[in-house]
Length: 204
Image (cartoon, rainbow, N blue to C red):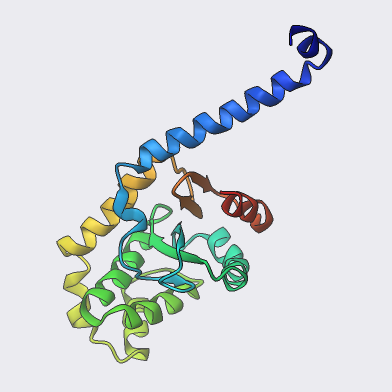
C-alpha cells in the first residue's frame, strides 16, 4: 500500500478533497437540522409541483439583479425536472426598499392568500425603480386590492416573524448574498451558473 501511494501521490489529494466535501456536507446538514420546517413548510411561492419530492429553497431580494437574471433558467430547470420544487423565500438584505417590498408581498398573502401573493410578487419582480408606498399602492390598484387593509399588516408580527426567520436561517448557513439556494445538504449563494448549480442539485 505504501509503495502504491508513493507511486501515485495524487490519490492523497483526491482523498483529501473528498473528505473535505463530506465534512462540509455534514456541517451543512448539522446546521440545517435546527430548521427542519425549511423543507416541510407548505408551499407559498415558487416554481414546480408543490408535491414534488425534492425541494430547493431560494432566498431572494426584490432588488437583486442576479436573482432576476437567473430566474428564467430556474423555471426551465424545474420544467425539465418535475421531481423538483423551487420554493422562493424573502430575504430582503440589499436596501430598505427591499424589506418594504417583502413586507408588502407577505402582507398581501396574509389578507388575500397565495394566488394574490404570486400576483403581487410578479409585479414587484418587474419593478425597476424605487420600491416605495406609492408603487405598492399602484400595484394594489391594478390587482383590485385594498392597500388600506394591507398597510397595517405589513408591520404585523406574522410578517415580521417570517422575515426574521428567513434572516436567521441565512445567518446560520453563512449566506452572504442573494440569490441563495439551499437543499438538505448544500448551500450556494451568489451564483447564476445554472449548469454548475444543476450539477450540485442532481448529484445528491
